[in-house]
Length: 223
Image (spheres, helix red, strand yellow):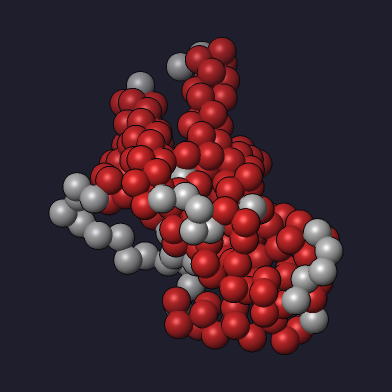
């Protein structure tokens, strides 16, 4: 694969990651809308700054996850675990991403139960964050939200393990996080206003983008 083809695939991946975040708004509102809305009601935010701090921190955590995932993928290849068969990592990661997409569609025999940290611990810290002050609490809450178990986030993190560099892994997750910003920033206003059917269609759209991203990664590995 020459440089121009590589650049095209990178931009393609960023676009798919961003659109996954955008179309995943139904999933975000369904899974986290009430959580975020309740968090800010308890936090007592009076200005827009805590909302911005919360979501900027959440997206920053996604970017850090992307950097760590890409670094892990690079280490696996360079230590000889995969030798020169870097494509093998891409094929495996692509298949996992595809399975996560099918899980979002509800048609996979395998249900994702993976998270970046224990869920019970995350919930305790999330609730306790509201007592840390408005701005510090928003920052802590955003960081914890970024670590919450989510098939879409997990799929993007797995894809990031195949990134050619740690920077590109971070940018992939950053693109995904940017796509989620419109829905999550307005979660407290939109929650409950999007019907279950609308959220369902948006989730299906996001799942299809995840599947395409997984299949594209498999293709990269084969190429």
